[in-house]
Length: 538
Ligand code: AMP
Image (cartoon, rainbow, N blue to C red; front, side, top):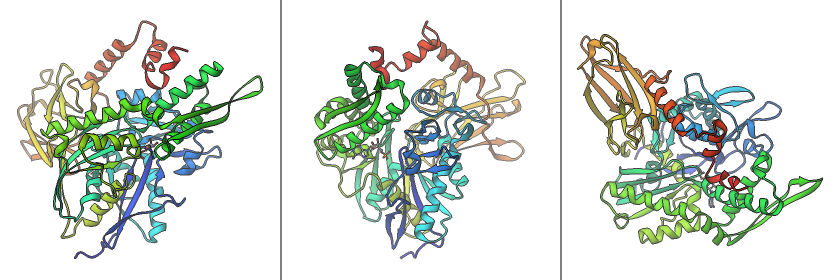
């Protein structure tokens, strides 16, 4: 049997809402409690009114009074370009300022200063390191960090960078569903097909894995990066705002502090309703009129919550079926369903799992903890004789831009990693000019909808030479080129600038979206649905 690792290692699940950290002792993975004695740490970083940096629960506590200087949801921004569609949409919803960083990436303003997302996540990771070191009473130099399966190459690189900034030697970036599967099946000698259903704060992620002993093979993965707990909260918020409007003809959305309190109240009621059939959103002194306080007191039943959100739950099952269909599987082929993510605790979700898969979700795998536990198990098993074999897949295609701003796929979705695809370099666009290749990742055929990963530039003389796109076991892209003088040579991706083709495509897309009413109208249009939809009627 393998002895304990020389260097202790921890597994970190860096979630959109919360982070969780685990270590392995005597071959049993355990969660490390936070400084407040909890098992999860809010992934929130803030600058207090007095100029102190706050991380975790204390940072989250001051969100209501200091929303501009409280950074949450960093996981949705990290590794994305500032001008990407996702970032531009999130700017409408987040209470802090999202700005363009030094390399054209999304960054945030905290106390008037620009911070990159790896820097923000590094605050959380450094705090985790401190907590783990205090708890385990030794240095923890190494970590495994989990990321969503759908994370692009740029997002994975950015998480790695955050880990490094926090002082970790990041031994491995692992996909969250794979880590969850490890927590369930590690060293149990199973031969099963499992489905990991991960409904977290901001995203829904589904993966199907084949477990054969300690070989964990991902068969297919998919989901929706814009479907999660906040969408459930938003339905309750819309309902509460509408009620308040009906009673008082006051638009609470105009008051950031009132809105934050409504958001907190809505989420708390939603969580209560997972346990009890009736809850009340009780928010005294939410607004005032002529010096008189106006309260919000809104009873909410589980049944009403289910009416408000059942379509969101239905959508998760459509996505499960889509992912299964990619491998010609159906729900009856699944031996176990593993739940991950806080929102999967909703009773309606569990009921529908039973209906859809003909069996209840697996009990005993804790939805908030299993990713960190699995990451810790993976860390502990590295370099040991009974180590695990992970066979993962690429969750989003990678390709290169064509002159018409389309994406030509080089590596397809669900390609098993590690993997290499080769192609021959096309001639330069203009004779005598260098060859420029812009690389993108995403599902769309149009580059404008995908994430720009970077560019490579080679002399015109390289036309027709071989180029390799290699995905390593962490799903990171390595590009190399058959140099006539040196043989296969690794190339650095340049990511500083936005390629001209993308700039043009973004400008065209913005123009196509802008309604006649001008920028103000465009803003309203964007907010048309969801959270702000009812305002149109007000
Ligand atoms: P995660 O990203 O996994 O931390 O999930 C956080 C999301 O789960 C948030 O939207 C929470 O409101 C939601 N959540 C946490 N606990 C529960 C619960 N018991 N019932 C329903 N949703 C929950």
